[in-house]
Image (spheres, helix red, strand yellow):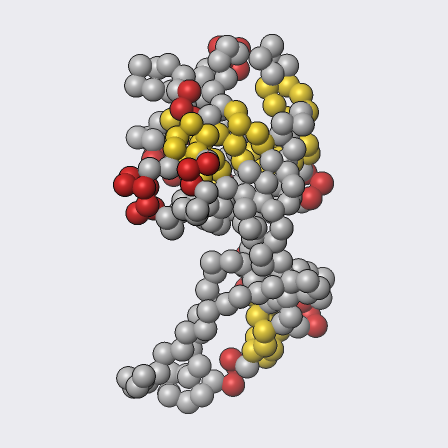
Amino acid sequence: MYIREKEFKPSLILEPDGTITISKNRTSSTAFLKRHQTPILQCIERRFAQFQGDVDVDSIEPVQVVKYTNDQEVVAHYDWLMPNASELGGERVTTYFTYLQANCSMGETEFIEIPFNRSLHERFCDILICDENVTEHGLRFRPIAGNTVFWYNMDEYGQVDYWTVHAGRPPGYLQANCSMGETEFIEIPFNRSLHERFCDILICDENVTEHGLRFRPIAGNTVFWYNMDEYGQVDYWTVHAGRPPGENGTKIGLNVWTRLEKFPV
């Protein structure tokens, strides 16, 4: 599923009087996806519905993809729609925010009114920011690609929940800015009939015939292969190269090799 750059437009906000406008309080850009647009999107919609106890899929708004560059943000706000809910198809009961890509030094989602409590929250420092400034902020979720933050915008009595006020902080400058940086398998040519369905993880540009199979440097992804064939012989098809990440880029990876025998340390 691809979103072309030209599909992103300045993000909008809903004003208290019901008008929808561009605002300095929300400086990101947004692309809207049509409901049930692709099988992948249908799967995402079904999973979100099932997570909430099999609610009707059509109760979920069309998905928005929001993009932030280094200094863009959305200031503290609520997702519920009161007093305009009845005119807009009903109140927003829940919110999902999923990080699709996040190669940034900041960019957290902060719940302003929920203070960090060490006894409750320190066990979750893999997904929360637990730095020396925790007492100066609300609860801050790290922008980890693939993670989703989910919350209810209304309480058990059907009233809007003021604790859900939150902000999308600007992502800062890139920690892993890879304009290139692919892992290329030199001897394995790109085959459109086999490989084009995997263009989310492979590079499928106009130069595919000039290169071997190239894996995109996507944070969190792993490339796995056998270095030996089924007969125990070394496999010459596995010759590969780690390409440079481009100007001012950084690529940090983890190499893990498994031996035939126990490896002495």
